[in-house]
Length: 270
Image 1 (cartoon, rainbow, N blue to C red):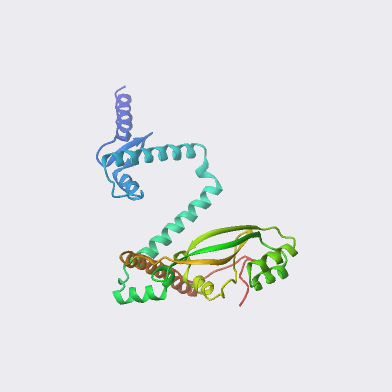
Image 2 (spheres, helix red, strand yellow):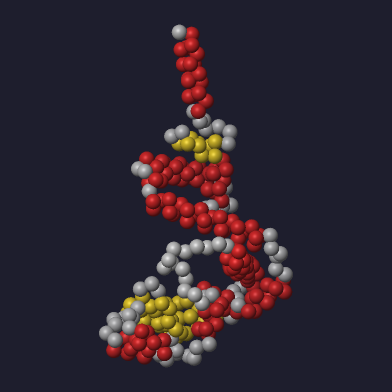
């Protein structure tokens, strides 16, 4: 009898010790799962205005975390965390996080560009700085042609009217539209190609199932204010540096990696 009492007491003690409480670094407990102060701070930092670390903001952020925790618990209850789709996306998300952290670590330890380097960068990317413009575009939107001959004629077109005539002759319906486009949104290499086109000559952008042929009708100067240019330039330089880090690192890793393909999956030999 005494042994039974001791066992019962030990079980009760174990249950009590496993019960999590909202104290210390634990700001809330949701169905036995803790939300820590670190999680709350991370949630606040991820908001659009992280400087608004007021009591009201912290309360709202904590409620968001609780809602998310409840939805996650429901998803697990439904067995979603055991599904092949979830496992695949989880691996992809983990891979992306590790790659981002690898690149960030290397970029953040790199030397800060000098004022001369920043000035050179701005001069070589005028579309985002002193030479920045807003373009008024006339456009034709149409489904991607399946006939290579039609595609070739569209690429060779010297005007938007010629594009329309080619589409009409091929029986391809299209829609006319217009839009404004900030040249700062262009990657530099693409901007350089478009900027060299003769006036009135279209440029074509292909999407997954549609294409857009555009002609610049009007250019309005929109230079970046000098007080903003340095910050924007630093961010763009860091982005370019991150892309270069990825390319260089992948090239080095591939050179020493052992990669085996199932027949039919290997890339074509160069």
